[in-house]
Image 1 (spheres, one colour):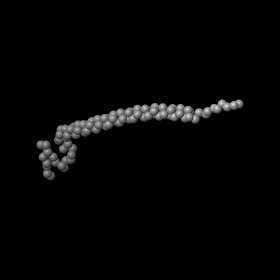
Image 2 (tube, one colour):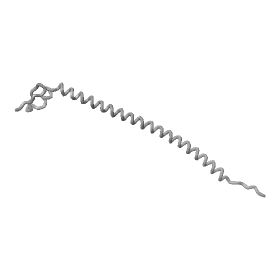
Image 3 (cartoon, one colour):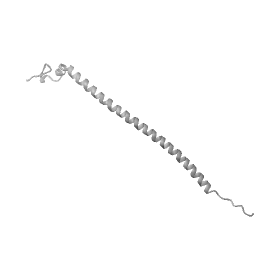
Length: 99
């Protein structure tokens, strides 16, 4: 069988992957660690972005709730004025005449 030179060790494909992994455990560990750090950095970036968008959404919802509350107060004032106007305009008039 042909043997391949990898990292100073001879690799014989007939012996399986376990001897290859054992022979290159240090390099594989470094590559996996670097990939883990890159993945953690990506997760951190997107989590921070998600947090900022959520904060912006919460502030927008809060201001919208305040605007809705103010609108409700104005509507209550409008209803009170309309009720007062209706009562004033539709008040029965008593005419005192001869008995």
